[in-house]
Length: 103
Image 1 (tube, rainbow, N blue to C red):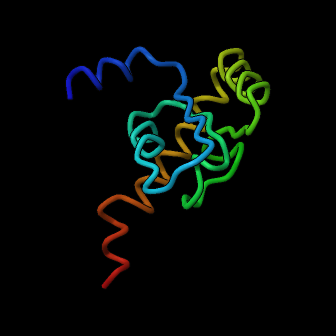
Image 2: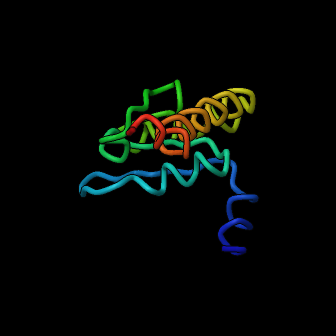
Image 3: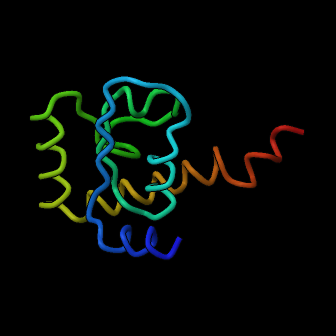
């Protein structure tokens, strides 16, 4: 866990370029928890109720992913605002308070 925390502490962006596959999108949720902005393909975000330019940036081509990463590296405030909304999403949909709505 300490190595993972150290890796996230050094990261400026998390890129999740999935083109196939299924299951829970834990890497995206993990990045949200660490407050690191995410660039993902639509496939990578499938099943999560997240929106391009609200909780993360999305792109489905290599050029679109590169452009999104450049935007984040050039505009730190964009990354901070995405990460803040992503954390709020995580806490509301996947945190302890989300369990209260199951009752």
